Every structure is written in C-alpha cells, then in structure tokens.
Length: 449
Ligand code: NDP
Ligand code: 2IT
Image (cartoon, rainbow, N blue to C red):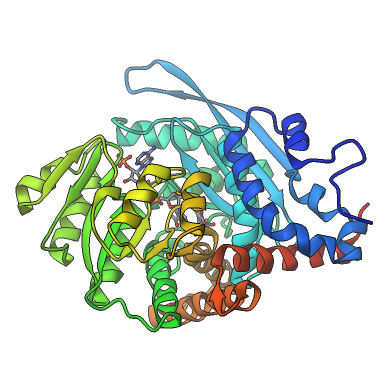
C-alpha cells in the first residue's frame, strides 16, 4: 500500500485546501515536514495502517473563546482567545501563549504542529500545544494587562492542568503575564499547581527558564560549528529580534566570544559595528521592557546605525540567527545573506524563514538549522520546571544549565543520526524525522478508540 492521505485526497494540497482552508502558515509548516517524512511513512506498514499522518495534521482539539476585558477608561473590549491542543500522544499538551494582533487560527495551528515535533526532540514527555489571543499589549497599562490576563484565564482555566495542558510564554507573554495568569488560575480554581511554566522563582519557577531558549540556541550553534570543524569565537553574528530569545541568544553568543552586530524589532534594526556587550544588552533589556519602546534610541546612545522599517539581512556576517517571528526572512533576504558570505542560519524563532528562503538555503553551501531543533531549549527547561513542581523542590541553576546543555547535544545527535547523507547533515530532515518517529510510535502503540 502506498501512502495517501485518504481515498478522496491524493494530494496534500487538496487535503489542506479542504480541511485547513485559509491557513497559509499552517500549510507551510505541514508541507515542510511532509517532504521529509513521506518516505518514512511509505516504508512503515504500522504508520500507514494507523493513518498517523492524517491524525498528525489535524489538531486533537481547538478551544476558541471570547476575551472581554475593560480598559482603564472603562470601555469594554473583546478579543479572540485560542488554545490549540495539537497532539497529546507523548505527554500533556505543552507550548506557549502568544499575545499579538497577528494571532489567528492558522498561526496557532502552525505553532502547535511545530511544537509537537520540537517537544518530542527534547526527549521529555510533552505533547504539543499553543495558544494566544489577537490582543495587542503595546501601549497598554499594567492594570490593563492584568485585567486581560484575568479574562483570558477565566475562559481557559477549565481546559488546562498539570496532567492535561501546561501553557507557558511566547511573544509578548513573559514573567509578568505568566504571573497574572497563574494568579487568576489560583483564584478561580483554588488550586496551587504547576499549571503554567515560565513562573518567577518565588512561586515555583525554574532557574534559567528565562534565558533557556536563547542559551539553548547558542549551545546548539556550538554543536553545529563543532560538527563543521569551526568555532563561534571571533565570528560575526546577525541577530534579529530584541525580545526574550534574541537578547539571551546575544548574551550567550558574546560569552562564547562571538561578535553580535545587530538586533531588530518591528520598527527596524540596529547595526553595531563594534559589537554588543553585556552593558549594551542590559540597556536593551530595560529599554524594551517599556511598553511600545523601539530600538531606535540605541543608535544615538551607543554610536550605532538605525535603519527603520527593515530587517538586518543586508549585513555581512558569518552566523545568522533570526529570533523575532515567523516568515521574517524572505527569499530576497536569503539571497543577500548568501551573497555576503553567511555560512550558518540557525533559527531562534519559530519558522522565521519563508519556504522560498529555505529553498535558497537548501540549494546553497550554507548550513541551515530549523527552529524546532535550535530553539527547543526553552520548552526543555519548561519540562524541567514541570518535574520540579511535581517534586515540590527546585534544582539549582548549574544543574539546570547542565541538563539544558545535555538536551541540546542530544537534539544535535538526533539530527545527525536521522539527517546525515553523503557526510552532510540536513538538520531539517533530521529534526523532522526524529521528532516524527517518537510521536508516531506512541500513536501506533495507543491505537484508536
Ligand atoms: P518577545 O515578545 O520577547 O520578542 C519578540 C521580538 O520580535 C520583539 O523584538 C518584537 O518586536 C519582534 N517582533 C514580533 N513580531 C514581529 C513582526 N511581526 N515583525 C518584526 N518583528 C517582530 O518574544 P520571544 O523572544 O519570546 O519570541 C520570539 C520568537 O521565538 C517567536 O517566534 C517565538 O515563537 C519563538 N520562541 C520563543 C520561546 C520562548 O521561550 N519565549 C521558545 C521558542 C521559540 P517589538 O518589540 O517591536 O514588538
Ligand atoms: O515556542 C516555544 O517553544 C515556546 N514558546 C516555549 C513553550 C514552553 O512551553 O515553554
């Protein structure tokens, strides 16, 4: 039997057109995985028999709700809230919550789909999920953020729990929002339990969770460079974004002897020819924590160049780390980077490269590592936070750092095992196949109802 989606759909395109209409980001994420795993399914009777692919491209459940909240001026606003519980075969659903005006079902389905593979790669027992709202926190007061978080949790609380679904942060959801969401959950349910990760240390957070995604990106980068007889020391790094992932990627990169020459936000990018350092990064952290602040003043303060409305892909550097958002790196950007001699593209964000940009990299002499492998350190430390909450104990920072390093090394090894051909590691293929096998085997073992 050759693998097909269902008797009525002989192409993936037709299938997605019918069952995921108007969801381009989700189609993009599925297509990207499908290329690599089709041969694996074709060669496995159990996967075909269990129809794992069709079951994997449909979320197990989507919860959609209204979030009514009150502004400081007393107006009532309504946003749309979601939780996509994508696949729970290997553990409770796990994945972040995003607050951004661009949030819609397509974005959250792509993120939940990617999360399923990423979580499997960590080796920890976590299924894939993602949630969020089209709420725009920019310019909102602290009290408004708190009321929004209360309203969001009011709608979500009955669908989550330590053995059901454990959300965390993502774009515009950091320690402050997780605190408000956790407080709301506790007040509504009367339960103090590990229902969210990314908590602050005094109430059950894990050391290093804040830094974990960015640090993990650089631990992964280190393995990539070592596998190519190269090292980070002295390399120029082009980083996009100026949030949690970008800042901590930059911090670890500096510590490893790299020279970080850019950061960006939704208004533009800065080019700092001298390279960032810990003092400059501390300034960025404090400055960007202010609602609606852009990176522009960095240029004047530190003698750098500010380019409004553009991403940093025209710069010359060795290692490119897109750490802002999906589809921020397009075909033109990819070609510019290649022309300027970039050697490695390592994704800190989720799916920051467009399909066309990925094709440019695939045809060129450049090493490409996908977000689902490179940025898995954040959710990995979330997994360790869950374990600490279960034990009602916390581990120390060095212990967590050692586990994070181990996990990133293990992910690199999985990519190497599943993705090596003719002595070359295809990190996308390796990550897709390794993540898929684990989830598919669990689905086969559990049968259907
Ligand atoms: P933050 O909210 O901390 O930072 C996001 C950054 O990206 C900001 O600099 C923001 O700019 C910029 N940005 C957001 N949307 C756009 C856009 N449409 N165009 C240009 N820039 C944009 O989020 P994180 O750092 O947590 O997340 C960044 C990426 O990493 C996302 O893809 C996320 O899914 C992924 N990720 C996050 C993890 C985590 O643990 N936090 C774990 C793994 C992946 P501005 O300040 O102007 O809004
Ligand atoms: O994309 C991601 O991996 C995250 N936003 C982190 C998810 C988590 O549960 O820590």
